[in-house]
Image (cartoon, one colour):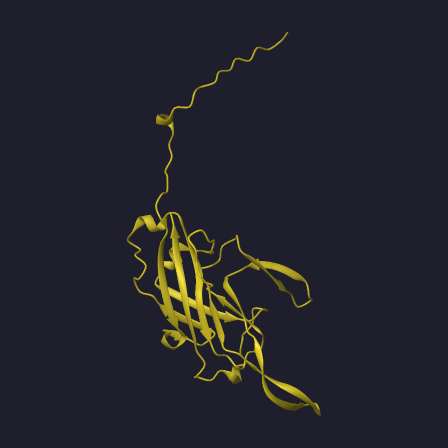
Length: 205
């Protein structure tokens, strides 16, 4: 005995569809920060109070996505422990779409959520002088000033930002080295060292 299956195809009718379109151009907020104007914290872990520069009363800004780009970063850190500086926004950037590998104490690689928004390379230059190291002459090298700039286009993909944290009025900036440790030894953080960074926050509806 065979079973008969009855079926029918219903044509698509737009009036019965429920959808919400997010349209419009990206909206941006450019924030210039100087470590000397931080609200609290130190050079490597600074807190800035942004107040109400981001209009949290606009519900349309809570839809869509927020991304952040580093447009520029300038700093002079002659006593760096490493030749790399990671600019991190730990309270804003904790998306499960961004990962970084780190190493455990037993030298195993693990993946962790990445809160960095830029990796800045520090170059060295020869001073023209030599120094004695372990009884031998060696070229004297000094760290060059960090000068990073980039142009952001409308179709570029930035680092995803937590919209609610962005509207909180707190902006925490942390500097780490390539191993997620401090960039300067505690004894070498003179008050004259500073950085200037321009962050571009983009809302994409």
